[in-house]
Length: 145
Image 1 (cartoon, rainbow, N blue to C red):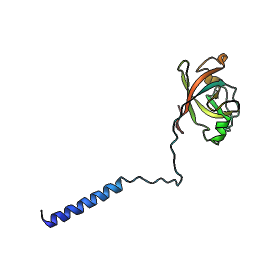
Image 2: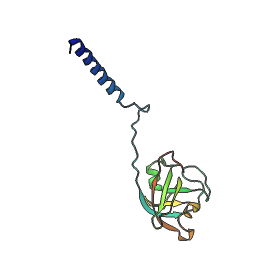
Image 3: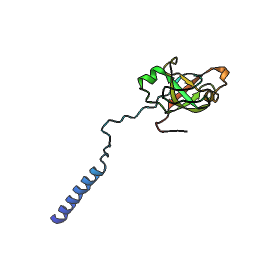
Image 4: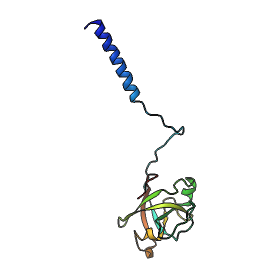
């Protein structure tokens, strides 16, 4: 090869390498705040039902709405940031699954316990049962059934 061909080949390789490194660079976010992905945590605890009304999230609901209330301590620790987020709930005894929207907090509930509206509870068990063991987790923010 001539020195001219080697020189052209050198510059071609240099530009190709430069182009590939620029095109592979991450696109900067418009936000200056760091973004952390929330790990999906499945919790297990008892689920009970309650008559709904004005919830801690500021929305008035009816017993026919699929309302979920999380423990007050959990709600306070998150600063109510889960308000409006959907929750997937599974009855561990019979495998029935349904979704409810977090709109309230439950002062008497422990960390992994839920209080749910009568209409939502009936999807898992008769109201007379009063309680069942549930596995649950939050769906991605913005998701709805």
